[in-house]
Image (cartoon, rainbow, N blue to C red):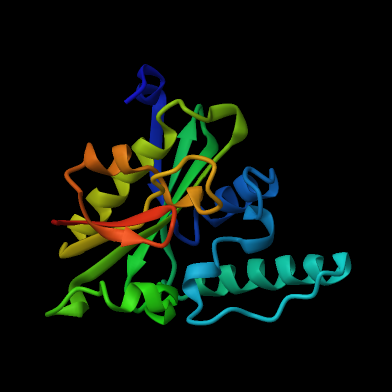
Length: 200
């Protein structure tokens, strides 16, 4: 972890920290983040999207509102990373039920773990403020997410990081980041990602 990581603090996403989450995403910290509001993996299937700009604005507003509702009902989990009180990073984690999108992916179905799926956790998204890239923010978020999962009873934790930097799905993190936390590669996942797991 980079030395700068020592200055970071972390908090769970809650009704109290929701304004910080929104402040981070309002900065447009990564391509697509402002429009998505980290809702992609919380839906079992994609929503129809128009290419017209006004419809994209409406989609962003809809996603933001749905994220608010999920947080209010305790159905959206994640870690916010702060530097000097300012939110600079985000990591989404949750149970399989909370993050069902992967279950509809054909290439994932053959890799799905066998046994008790009730204790399956997923780490799906990382967002880092552009000014704080490559400074240990995502690693700090990952460590805090694993601690949060452990405090909720632990289980099998899955991640889906990229193996080729520059790939579209780089928001899923990097292999080396997860390896440092004890994750092992299970299998390829598409052309640019892998499935990794560890038990907590």
